Every structure is written in C-alpha cells, then in structure tokens.
Image 1 (cartoon, rainbow, N blue to C red):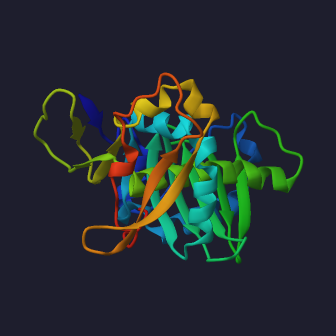
Image 2: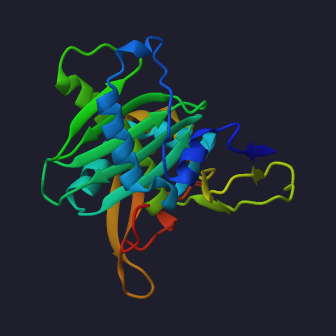
Amino acid sequence: MNIINEKKYPYLKYLSDGIIKKIGFTADNNEQLNYEEIHKMYKCWKENKFGEEEILIITKPFYKAVQDSINKLHPVVLEEINNTNDDLIGTMLVNNIWISYKISFRKDSDDFERELYILNEQGLVIAYLIYTKKLQIYRIDTNTHFTETIQVIRWFDGIISTIIAHLIFRKYAEVETKIVLPTNHKPKEGEYFNKTRCIFTVLDSKWFTNLVRSEGFKVRGHFRLQPCKNENKEWIKKLIWIEDFEKSGYSHKAKITEYVKNTNEPII
C-alpha cells in the first residue's frame, strides 16, 4: 500500500494551505541564506496557487520510459515549446522529489519565463529559480558549483526539459492515469491511500517497455508528433516512433502509434 500523508510529505501541507510560513533548506549552513530574497520566493510561490493545480505522481515505470528516451524526445520537446502560448503550471512527485513549476511560453520566441521550486521528501528546499521580467533569483543547494549564471540557467532548463518530456508523454502517448481522491477508507493492496486534502493524478506506463528494452532503440530512430485526423475528422497529433531499420530484439507489441489524443487538450 502506498500511503500519502503530510507526515511523510510535509510539502503537501504547504500546497493544501496555500502558504509557506517557514521552510527549511538542505544546505548545512543556513547563515548564508538571503532572507529578503527568500521572502520574495515565498510570495511568488503563493501567487501561483500550486495547491489548486494538478499534482502528478510519476511512477517508476513512467519515469524510466521518459528517462530512457529523453535524448530522442528532445526534438519533440523543442517543437512543443516553439508552437505553444500556454502556461504550464503544476506539481510533480518524481523519485521522492517535489517539483512545482510555472513555465510561460510565447510562440516563436526563444525567451520564456520560468519558475521552479524543488524540494526533497522531507520538504526541504533543494533549489528554486524565478526568472521573470520582474524578478530573477535562484538558489541551488547541491554539490554542483557554478561559476557563471548561464550555467545555472542551463541546469534548471535541463529540469524543465524533463518536466515537458513527461507532459508530452502524458498528452500524446498511451498512459495509464488514475485519480486518487482523499479518503479515510483503507484501499486494496497495491493502491494509493490518500490521507491528505489534495487530489493526485498517478501516471503509469507499461506499454513502453517493449520499445525501451532494445539497445537499438536508444541508438537508432526518432520520435515524431504526427498530424492526422481522427474518426471525427478533427486534426490531432500522435507520438510515433520511426525506426531507421528493423532491428533484432524489437517487439511490435508496444504500438505507440495506435493511441491518439486531441491536441486541443492542455498538456497538463
């Protein structure tokens, strides 16, 4: 049984309350904290109202499918970024790391605003980035040492690419989605027990295992968002895998091309 509660994940209390009163950092030396900057970070976080947005739980199979194909998905990520004016906003739980994000794209523009708030399982801040027209601040409490601001931006943009890759899979590929509502009733074995005030969407992916298990998949071929019409004659896109050649070890059981989703639906 997978239990979700505020004791196990303190960050969920912040999301439910919609406010951060006091938060810790993973850095050992808190004397280095800029409290004026942290106050600005709290304010930006509150304005985004992440607790009212979708909270995604990324399962290990789903995460593995994305990670094993992240390099191949890069062109698709760029295409999605270059053709959207949408704001992506929400929260993900990935490998016991919480990521709340707001990413504002503008079509045919290389620049975009982004906010990232990254916390560990105990609810301690690992890193945050606020890069908007009004405010540019960041903090990273990791062993990574950067000498230039551009290195910091690239580090955060790498995380953003991973977020978008997960959302692309969710939008265009066959994904098992389960809504987990708050409850006091003990669920069946293997199900999620949501003892919080939040609603979660669990993303799973078993269909992709036949593709990612082949070493050839990681080296050859590429993904494409293929425009097509559905049975209602509406234009949609589907994520397809294009092989360079028929390779050994490949199984046609995982037919990603058979699942389509309306492109009018938001990514989140």
